[in-house]
Amino acid sequence: MSEDERYRTSTQYRLWSYSPDSLLALRSTTNRIAAERVREAVRRLREARALSSADTSEVENGQSTSAIPEGEVDCLTVDEELKLVAFYCRQTIQLGDHLKVPTEVKATAIQYIKRFYITNSLMTYHPADILKTALFFATKTENHYFRLTKFADAIGKTKPEDVLASEFLLTQGLRFTFDVRHPFRALEGAVMELQALSKGDIPPFHGAGAVIEARPHNMERRVKNAHGKAREYLKSSALLTDAYFHFTPSQIMMAALMIADKELTEWYIKCKFSAAAGGLQQKVLATLEKCATMLKEVDTSSEPSTTERKELKALAKKLNKCRNPEKMDLVGLQRAKREGEESVDEKIVKKRKLEREQSAKEGEDLFGPAIKK
Image (tube, rainbow, N blue to C red; front, side, top):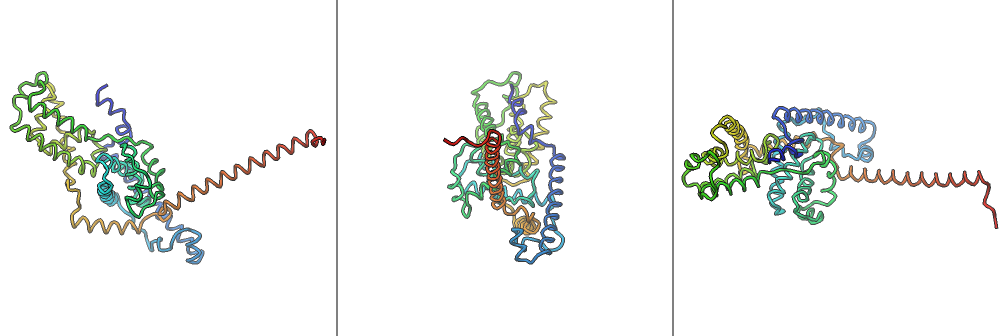
């Protein structure tokens, strides 16, 4: 089985690969449904408040009246949600740096967040809650062990139950799939091969002798420089764009190399194809150009500009006014669900006890009372 065939069997390809149009359609549907649910939840709370006093309303509904926006609810658009998701992905990178976790852990956590918000809206579940759980999940997936209590303490102002509150929600949103294929290892393999080609340590591919002879000048130095630049794109731009949804890990890797050194990358690709495969080579190059264009949309510094910061601040305020008031307290909802399940279990135990007692009584009625000695 080739590497390409193996990738096509992965959940990343089967469940999380989209065309740009299909991804936009999914996000638009999610946004529309969430907006409708927010307005409906607000309407229910307003009706409940109108039927009782403010204090009684707060006790019975478990919501503060301040959580209910006045007037028509102005919900986020799809583009506004995407901007906020990108911001919280940057926050995840910073949190990962604070916790000193490997790059793979941060990258996996960001993909969890981006996947979750395809079918869930920020107006329903706030990303500040989801990102902690996503990062904790990523430490498990990437075999970077972190005790829950230590993880919560390291974040600060966070309890273990805050991290676990959205555990099942995130698992559902990820469709119970946790595998994420990254382009980091592919980059290291390509760089090793380029270094070997530059030194002549490996023979040229069949029919590629002329291409090998036309290798770029100062190749060893250029490979080293391209390696560093490409890795920066993979650690930032690739994570903050939709590249993982539209391209394979190897395509993302080659696109990052193309941005770092286009001449070197095109020469490397020519080494992989025979002269008769010119059409296929052009098709590959066109795909890589599309991916490279997407990666260049986000600067590798991953820091928003002053204008972007102002816009994000305004969007954060807007989000606070259009959140679903019934889904704000994830810890409280989880606790209520757990207590409800416990009460159901108690009812089942009592029911079984009554059934046993009833069965014993019916046995006595059938055969008469026990004989006294």
